[in-house]
Amino acid sequence: MSTFMFTITSYIAGVKDRFTKDEKGATMVEYGIMVAGIAVLVIAAVFALGGEILGLFNNVAAQIP
Image 1 (cartoon, rainbow, N blue to C red):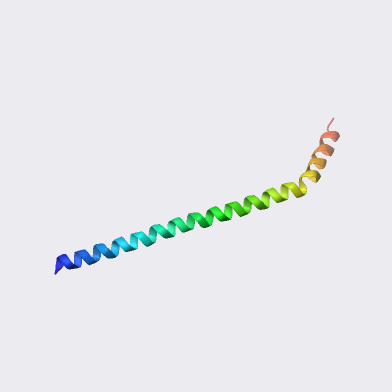
Image 2 (cartoon, rainbow, N blue to C red):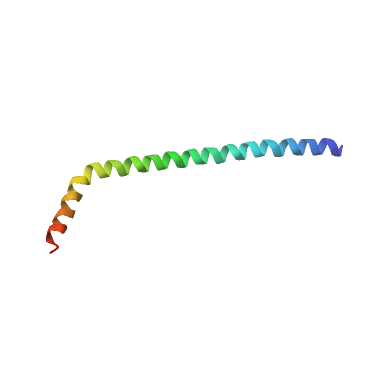
């Protein structure tokens, strides 16, 4: 009977490990999607505000003697 219990326990542990590993992979994919979204927002902000920021830096550079 103890061999049977050991076999069942090993099977359950294996199934648990597979589900745990899948969740870690899913979490990494979610973080990757979030980083990609943030990168898109930063790039859009740079394109939208790039000219104004360049003008600000040029004005500051012109004021420095």
